Image 1 (tube, rainbow, N blue to C red):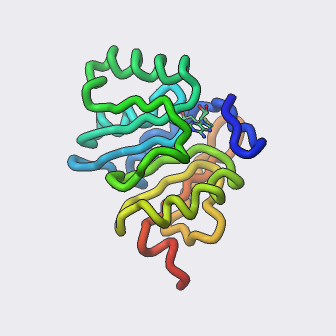
Image 2 (cartoon, rainbow, N blue to C red):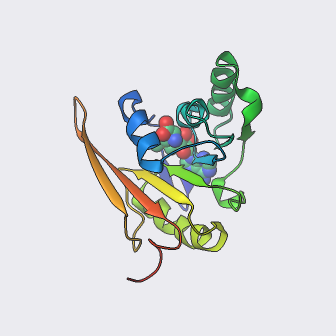
Length: 165
Ligand SMILES: C[S@@+](CC[C@H](N)C(=O)[O-])C[C@H]1O[C@@H](n2cnc3c(N)ncnc32)[C@H](O)[C@@H]1O
């Protein structure tokens, strides 16, 4: 379990059914550098590499989850294309990202917002699952029916979503 100022962000993996939607929404393609902030078992960043992203960065505080992510990437033969970072994502430089994925909490997204505004380059796509980035305008919102609930994906673009409109 990871904590940020007393806020717990447990490991709840993104459901496999959502991966196509996430890749399509972010338009993941060759040349992309795909970050998952709190990457869990690596499933999203692994999928991004399989979609053609040139490099992935899997940032995870939980050491055993990060090792699991590394094993999963290894079994797909793509571990060389992913950097595994056992660190608090607040301490990781994001300036080379072209896509950032976050399945966190609204409060954590709010706390990350100044860092995203400072470090991300114009045009970087940010996809969040279920929790918005407060104060940013989504470019697109996609609702997906799952067996037990409706999931919501938000697409933001740095330079558009963070500029008052
Ligand atoms: C809801 S899970 C999402 C996992 C993965 N992104 C996915 O979608 O399958 C959130 C993950 O973020 C990690 N996490 C929470 N706070 C973190 C922090 N400050 N730095 C790095 N990882 C963190 C947790 O350990 C957990 O694995």
